[in-house]
Image (cartoon, rainbow, N blue to C red):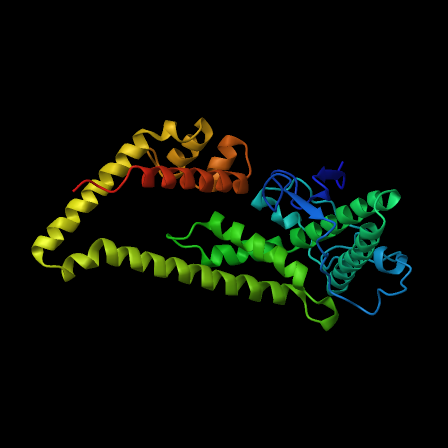
Length: 319
């Protein structure tokens, strides 16, 4: 059950699912956010919230639809749609629908924050269960807003993807910025969320690509350009050091089993094309391993960190 209480020391925390089901459009298995009662719940304030009965802010009026491309009443279920080819089935929010969902999400946060403060003064009882339910509802509304705007992320990721930047990496980055944009968007100002989200994601992509470009230029200068700036004898010495570093890398790859488990070895080998294999994308590797792309990415990062630490332990190249 989501929203259940966990006791960790003297601090009570609530488990809340923050991502779509495994294989869903947000990618990946349910990720858990442990919400502490000592952590304030941030929301966009509104004069509507004080004294509101709740029904007018939480329940759709009869005959009202929140979508721009269909007349369906209520909320469309899009769980389990992890294939990008099925994106045509994702609904598009109308301006009225956006306003309703953002107002609902922030009103739920407002209620949860008030209840959190009450629980700090007098913990226990039915209020704890109600707090968990509020967190579930907040997560569900947020995820539905994200699902209805996923096409924005895919469109921008395809636009910015290039030979040096993996589409899956941009999707992961874009999804994270989308969720942050949802938390920060002020629906009361009258702007469409799509405009705000596109600006936020594009700005992040520009910065992300610029950082990668600077890193690549620096590495290229180190690996090639320095040879033209050094006297011949020093250049020969630098080449010799690179050869020794390469020998360390080769030795480390041969001893991966000492530092990584079988799954981590498989991911590193397939992602980087070791052992005369073609490098695989996160998506194809995730499908092969029946994991989400985000989970594979996390395992890859963990494996690389282990190998990096092991590389340092090998010591400097011998003179």
